[in-house]
Length: 131
Image (cartoon, rainbow, N blue to C red):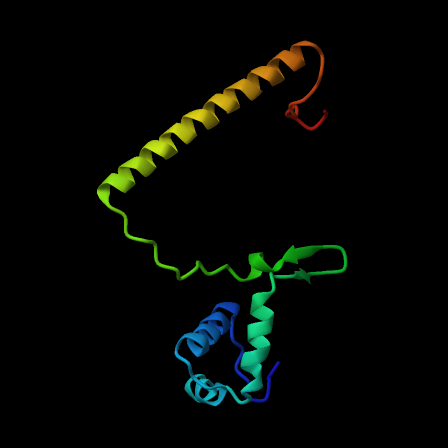
């Protein structure tokens, strides 16, 4: 449907415009002139809406989908801090230990489930149509 000359902006474009407005200390009118917006108040509206988490959108009466599935989220533009090689090695060692611990926990939980199923407690989902 034709929107009488109004351009539709995606969530990412709106985030970029609001970020540009905030970081470059532009007025709302200046920002509107740069991006071809008609009404400067739209920037304030976008700022309010973008601060809230995405809401559920109705796809039909029986099902709803999360807004993040419609518009992919934009990664934060916060640059990573620069780390020295020693800091990176320490981080790798820490993550390796964390991974080993997680694998050990996983093995322990699987063993616990195996023992429970030997005792007749059904925990794992059975494959196939009939359960």
